[in-house]
Amino acid sequence: MRAIAALLLLLGLGAVALALREGPSQPGPAAGPPPAAPPSGASGAGPGRTAPPPGAPPGGAGAAAVPRNLEGECATCHRDRQPGLLAQWDASAHAQAGVRCEDCHGSDHEAIFAERGRVPASRCAPCHERQTQEFLASAHGRAREGAVGNARLLAQVPAMQRRGCMGCHDMGRGDEGRCNGCHGAHRHSAADARRPEACGVCHMGPDHPHIEAWESSLHGLVYRATGDERQAPTCATCHMPRGTHDVSGGITIGRSGSGAVLEGEAMPIPMKRIRAETAAAEREAMLGRCLPCHTPRQARAALEDADEIKREADRLVLEARRLVEALHAEGLLDPPPEERPAHPTAGHALVLGGPMLYENQSEAERIFFDLAKFAHAITFKGAYHQSPDYTHWLGLARLKAGLEELKAEARRLRAGR
Image 1 (cartoon, helix red, strand yellow):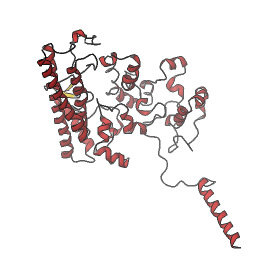
Image 2 (cartoon, helix red, strand yellow; image 1 turned 180 degrees about the horizontal axis):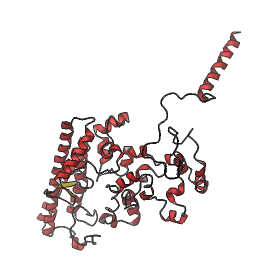
Image 3 (cartoon, one colour; image 1 turned 135 degrees about the horizontal axis):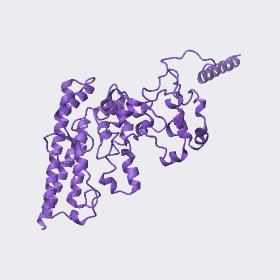
């Protein structure tokens, strides 16, 4: 009898476990909060489209089926040939809203092939007009025009131009800017675009180490520990408040590239010049983004310290530039600009900063390029992103050491006349 009772007990426990694993046979009230709606701005119900009901799952396992009208000619081939692509699309808010492949790509295969599948931002504008206009007016929207005529791009082979330069700078080109650079090609996810990793695809490396400096700051540490942007700011918190797509707001002299100087200040290498009134207004806007976590005095002091560090870095670069110009005037650069292959945009003139090349140059110019393009940017971008190590050891220390190396090279050249 005990054996029979034990067997019945085991069978009963097995049935309970199976029921827990498979769930109830009939739907019941959901436990916990309802599923979140698709992120704001991720998609919308455009003309002739039906938006998903509030709380509808965006796709994936257990999600509502993709609307039948999407299973047309495009999906017939691409579901077999690029199943990952279709899986991303199935999980998107666009798919659930009934947006079709041809709504974005058109139906002319030859035109699609010619554009390599790229979709211009203007195609997004009918449903996302505000976001599109903000994007096209921002630094992201102007990224392409700042690169296509740059000498460093023109000096590269076409494959490097496409992959090493335009891989980032093709973000914007008039109304042909690309939204998928941040949102993903077929997920079109606002949540994905808000993640710091999305910004780090381009905003990284020795010329603009935004993501590395932020990750090594206390802000990055707290975010990595919590994953909660309410407890620590991410890129979007400071540079895209309330979902704006104008990523330039709130930035003063610590701008992209080599930054900026105020009107009336010495410009060590080509950079943007801004008015003091503009800088003051932008600073107040950025301070407003710090206030949820910091006092006004604390936030202002941190940003003003970064301003001072930027100006110190500018001063060192200016000293270095004047030294290289003096060596050029003395005929000591080897080889001199007039004996090298022509610069793509400046011919045989001496170019320092801006479109300066990193090939076909003298040793003094090579040292200058490293300190002006890399150490200078690391210093002030580290400061504005609150990273002590990037500001000092990876930035200012390398900038000062580069200047000393350049002085030693000048002494060597002058001694060998």
